[in-house]
Length: 97
Image (cartoon, rainbow, N blue to C red; front, side):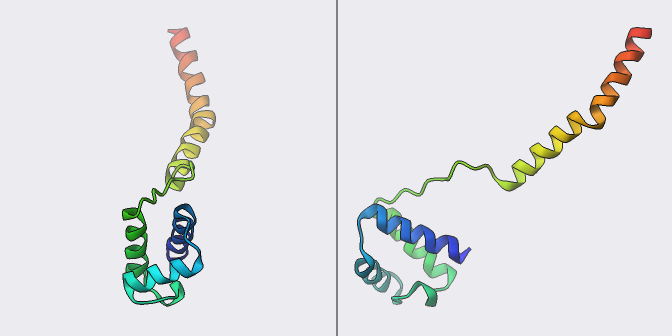
């Protein structure tokens, strides 16, 4: 999670046109530490929130949540797997009745 927050900070600073020196000055002002390596998760979140106040709007990368993808994959495998055979079986039963 720390790495993701660090990436957001770098992206936000780039979006706002900050260079490394300006970013480090902002980090010093927000949480008292110049290096992101020394910051804990709460401090990184505070820096991201400060960037959002300055106008940075983080965007998702368009990928679905991994859990959602797993569920969809499982559902589609069930649909094309065993359930397909069950549907064919039920179809045969209905036609015979």
